[in-house]
Amino acid sequence: MHSEFGCLCRILPAAEAVWRIQRTALVRGTGTQLRQEPRSPDWRAGPFFPSTYFNLLRLYHDLVDTMQFDTEATSCRGKACFRALADEWRADGLQRVIRGDHIDPLRGVKEEYAAFYEKYRHLVGHYFRTLYNIIRVIEVRGADDTGMYFRLLRAQLSRYELELLFYNNLSDVGEGLGRRAAEHGLLSHVALDKEAAALFADELVAMKDDETSQASHITSGSSPQ
Image (cartoon, rainbow, N blue to C red):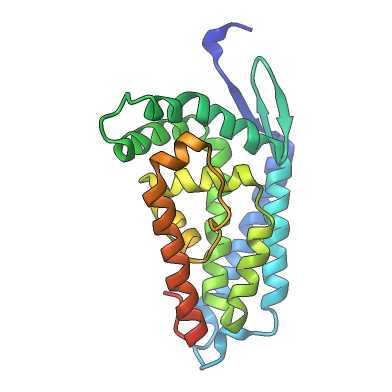
């Protein structure tokens, strides 16, 4: 294979078609239900929410299972794709930021990650949109069990997913998702390489502060937004 073809990443066509049908039906159904449900004081704690939540988790796992990442050196599917994507990000865009190719590291991450995201949009785009929708449903429907649902969601995410989510948070493309992920503690266990952790120490602390602030709102009974 010629090097100019670069890295070939794809979602298996048949599995993607099934996933799109399931996702459209579930997201449309959830959206319709949210719009039509009366806003009584306890409207968020509907008896069917746990079923909706676990259906969304199943959708997340179905999506991850369809992912495939191929390069000249490796081929992987499912969760293993996130490790390959994280390795690709560290060796390419992030490495340029760490070695000082950009005067401003944060601006450098935004630029480099934007290029990374565009290159792998057909993989990470579907993934991050699904994660964002799960978070929004928990925020709107989770009621008093919001913390539990977010902890269960965090338990599904590998260290490489958390790493990509962290950099997605620093970028312009992931602002909405990243802010919510940080507020709800999804990034509380993110692990970065030593050089990156030192370079973005302030951002790591800020995300911890977001989580602490959000936790205090939930404890006091305030709305998460």
